[in-house]
Image 1 (cartoon, rainbow, N blue to C red):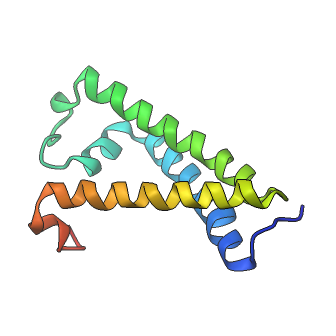
Image 2: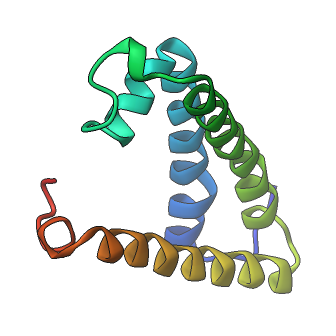
Amino acid sequence: MVSCLPTWPLALFGVIEPAMLVWAYINFVMDPFKYFADQAPFFAATDEHFTPQAVALSWQMANVLLLLAPIALICCWTQHREIAIGYLIAVGFADFGHIYAIYRAGPEYFWDVSA
């Protein structure tokens, strides 16, 4: 199938990113508690902290990851330039949301890339 994207963006957003999204979903299904604890390590020290609300939120997040994988494939492998550009702009704006979320967590997390 032919894509309108150049090789590097196509490889990153049309192959690597969808594969990583599916892998994240698989990791969640293999051990939901570990996935949740890795996201919120200070609040989920034991299984008893894995409340029904945390279970539901975790499954919803995993579902979003699985939903994004085919969307990335479809939008990056299309022959319609406008669709691919729109998808990449949306992904770029979403990255600002990720950066802001860590910024709001505090400077000790924002500036420490190992945290």
